[in-house]
Length: 477
Image (cartoon, rainbow, N blue to C red; front, side, top):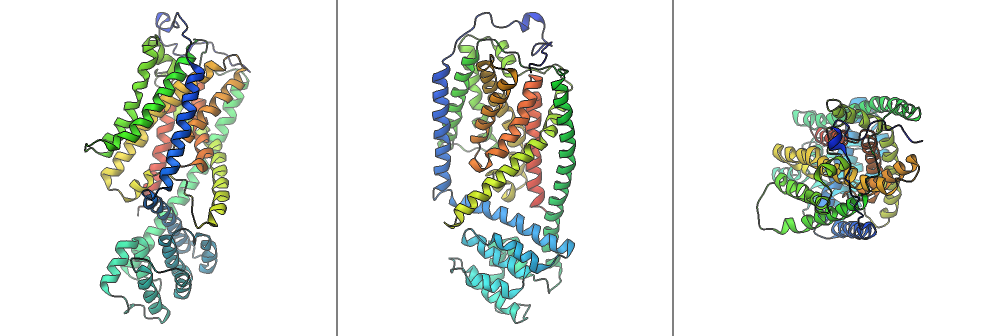
């Protein structure tokens, strides 16, 4: 059903500025798409090679340990808050006894917390010795506990400090068993309780907001079907091929900057390097101007406008993000299903697959300034750059390419292609593609409806900000 477009995109401009480009410039569409596909496939392949290289193995192991610590804190917090049966909790936690030796050593500590010293020793007996002698120290520690020597005389103070330094919260959990109530024990359980409550509150808020989003989405679709919504995309400029070239050039710049920027002999903060990488790639926007499209037309085509209602566009972005919550929920379920299937395949090889962004490591281990830099990159710079190129340039190209199709078919096809490319370029891996595509679908709804990228950028920033806040809170306390 073709919606009523009573007012052209960017209608707050006067008629003279709104006038489309007089001459239609045909772009090298097929060549541009060949370059895009080759670059995207190459980029994903390079990412996979980097993930499997020995140099990145420590980072992957650290990400796995961060996720495992979140899970372990949640389990311990559940037991502490609800006084759930420890044996039942231990059975549920047995699925976490996998991965590399560092995680399995930490699982032995979790088993000792939930089941007792004997369960910890059983888990430790199944493991080989490690280079840092952590296993040997833990065997002596839990051997003392099994004999009810809760002061653990077999473990020296230096070894205790070593456990705290190498194992963090797990080290404190091992050194402060539930049988010995102390200030140190309370600090350990307080962190677990905080993680548990953060998960519970976050889930509760997500359910409430998701329900509101479902209602909003139903109303939105009803208004759309009744032709009471005004669209924001007007096709027919004839310049769609130029924007395919522009996206191909941006993708090439982005990949080249990502490869060569770290090789330059310059010292700069992560914020500066990230800004140079992201904003520098926007130099590709000079291409359509070089190809003869006036900058004023480029700005309108890609959505760099204030929108029909400038004061409302940011709030519409929030509303569109809320309305996309049901779609995001479906995407998350599909990602969990893929992760479960892949985990089952990798389990036979003793490997794990963690579909999580590397930024989590910096949020977990970094200081306040590091976290602030990551928040700026994730919540300001990334939304501007990614929305400009995906929902702005690439979406404009595909909508122009499919403008002769039925409106709904054109929108769905364009949204699917753009969302897939958006998801594929992220470093979480193919397992996370459904979840990332679902987020992108919600942002594309805003783009199609409003024309302006302001709602898309606001929704993108809101999504990233909530994820950054959640990770910080979960690992806080």
